[in-house]
Image (cartoon, rainbow, N blue to C red; front, side, top):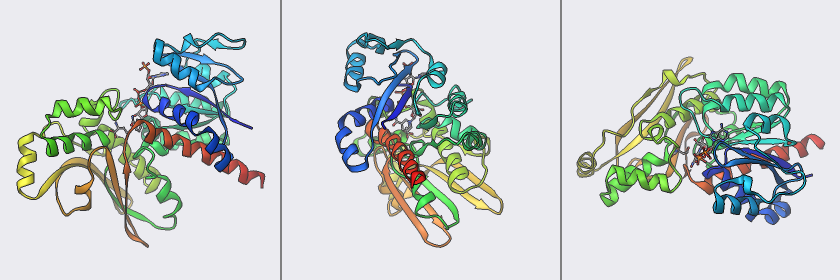
Length: 351
Ligand SMILES: NC(=O)C1=CN([C@@H]2O[C@H](COP(=O)(O)OP(=O)(O)OC[C@H]3O[C@@H](n4cnc5c(N)ncnc54)[C@H](OP(=O)(O)O)[C@@H]3O)[C@@H](O)[C@H]2O)C=CC1
Ligand SMILES: N[C@@H](CC=O)C(=O)O
């Protein structure tokens, strides 16, 4: 039976997943036996539509493109419009909620409440919104477990690059003692553009926004708050060590000038916004700060919106993973892999 999805938020990432589901429908059916139907989309300004039998993805995308409002979707018997996020979560027939609303770096809301409402209604959540995972990981995972539902958030760190799934699955059995990485695509894009093309900070940020990399409020990117959320998620989920946002020292890239970049270049170095977490006894010491790294450092060669992460493992030594850190399709894919995982786990239960 097709997996029924309801989207909360329908911006860059939500539309990215919808396009993948439209474009890869047959391949996913044949290769993965994966079938999904979008039953609802609820967005703050773009409107809200629900049909228990499913919406036509191409029509929804086209209507949004042409009119800016999903509620101009052709009227068909059974179509409901105007439901807000909580009603959509609680009252639609979706199996899984795709939470892709904006990340609030102060409260994590309303996304934390979206997760609670979904879990308590017996619905899975897959999300790229970092707030709930960074601020309420323990509480929400307990509620999800209690209700026997799945909570997937691969895309909260390094978009579709398996920065969470890889250490949890293929590095299982190792203790990860240290993490160091470039975890924000927007700032890495800005620093790369400034260094390689002499583009101004403002121009490079504008490009990152146009390419769909930046947060709705890009202050989160450039001041390091987004990377801070990500290191907190990594600490709690991958290092199994409680760490709160307040415990992470945080400095962004707003003070770095073209002159600083030129000077670093002359020294054989490159500015990067580094996220670090290190286990010391029972504690984790973590920071976000720009650093001049030597050009021979593997992280120095990571350019544009690409991210990279190095895990120090007690059994395997140093393992580095690099890949997309942001982007419409790349982050849309992170949701797809969480959805495929839900279906695979369901198959295992049947066996
Ligand atoms: N873009 C990327 O590369 C990545 C993004 N993320 C995360 O994924 C999430 C989505 O990102 P992205 O798609 O780029 O962001 P967008 O700003 O493009 O989209 C977010 C959408 O959520 C809507 N929205 C906000 N609040 C609500 C609400 N309460 N109920 C329903 N809809 C709401 C917004 O509505 P409107 O604008 O209509 O008001 C907007 O359409 C964010 O949390 C972001 O941090 C994670 C990894 C990568
Ligand atoms: N704004 C973020 C998007 C992904 O998390 C970034 O630039 O990395």
